[in-house]
Amino acid sequence: MKTLRSIENKINPENPFEDCKLEREKYADNLTRIIENYPSGFVMALNNRWGDGKTFFVNRWRQKLKKEGFQVVYYNAWEDDYSENALVSIVSEITEDIENPDKKLLDNVLEKGTGIFVKSLPAMFKIAAKKLLGNEGFEDLASLLGEEMGKPFQNLIDEYKKQKETVKGFKIALQEFALSSGNGKPIVVFIDEIDRCKPTFAVEVLEIVKHLFSVNNIVFVLSVDKEQLANSVRGFYGSDNIDGNEYLKRFIDLEFSLPIPKLKSFISIIYKELEFEKALKGQRMNIPDLQHDNEYFETFTNLFFEEKNLNLRQINRLMSQVRIVMYLFNINQYMLPSLLLLLVYLKVEKEEEYRKIRNKVFDYSELLALNKKLTVVKLNLYQGKIPNIINVNEWYFYSLYANYLGERLYYNDFEMEKEQFVKKYKDLSFDSERLYELLKMSNNRFRFSQLSLEYLLDKIELSQTISFD
Image (cartoon, rainbow, N blue to C red; front, side, top):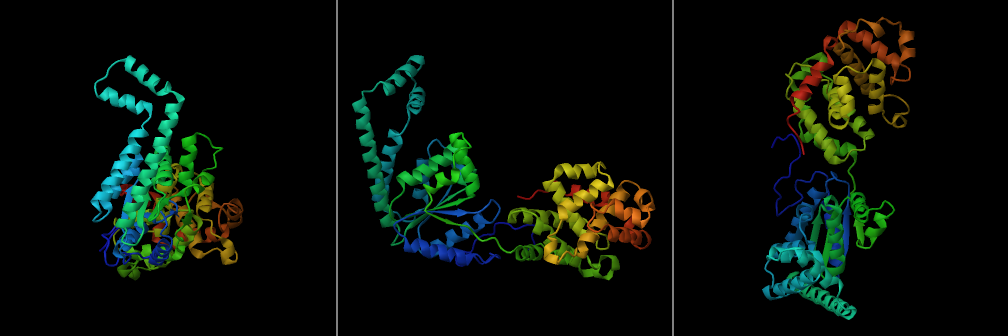
């Protein structure tokens, strides 16, 4: 099916990873073997940045675990961080996701869990509860606070002991339930999006997993960006001096990160899925000025993203936006796809610079400096030789911007002698001598020399009402 972006396809329960172009099923198999060999239970962190494909992977791994006979529970913490009590949310997901549970054992878990929930309510929750029942006035508030704070010390000790027994009873009930429901395998509980929760809820979930669910036959998989989760920990304690990573070591027994695919391989997949070759070849190959578009664009795309610290989702999003803009061109029209990608990147990631170009704020020096900053390639990989497409794209950018300013390649810089031009832009251009030669050549030979950058900017902005997640 033709698509403008990678979407979450319906997962084939018989072959969950059939649509995984990154060949990540082998990682799911390895992690499953670890779970099978440590049935006593542990907490695993699947740690990758947002946008690196964790959710896609986790959804397919969950389905494969089910196919292999595991009981699997999925808890999206972010969807529930409005909740007043994470324990209730997690237990609720267990009751919904476990297939054919022993009702008696499940009821025992719920009963013990209720005891923990009620006894752990702080005084202010009790106040709120009494207010909802109809008690009125400040006197209730004062008396309830006094009731909590004025208890004899022995009573507090007795309550603490009861609470410990309640927790112990809950864990015993939970372990019996897990042993019965797992069919000889551990129950696997996935907790997703915890790094996006408000700090208080994120820490509460972690503490509950550690103190209440650390029992045999239950394995937790936290799908997280650990750096973001560590930030939540610091936010909870209100101090940058807290070492969030050290704090998280209390909860995480094993950490795994999905290897990021080779950039060229990933771009090749996106290139094929979004049908760039179809857009840039075909009948266009019969037009001399357009016949190198596909070759140039594929090369430029790899060079460009090699420099950027973008996650897979960001790359896919940018390429998808470029692809949809391409639909606005006729077969015989210039697309200048490498420059198009550069402008789309500015529009999405560097809005201020994009606006300066749109509003004609930059002069040529500033434009060339920006272009060099955006597209500096790792020249050591090419023995210091600048790939031709980098020079060509600089030529596109400079020429069309000059036309956009209304100067039509005849004024200012274009009246300079070669030596003067080369000297002026020596440090701002990749190769100022080559740029000068291309500019002079384009002025005499190429039809696109009359195109303005506005031609591309208008196409981009015409498509901007379409957004990509």
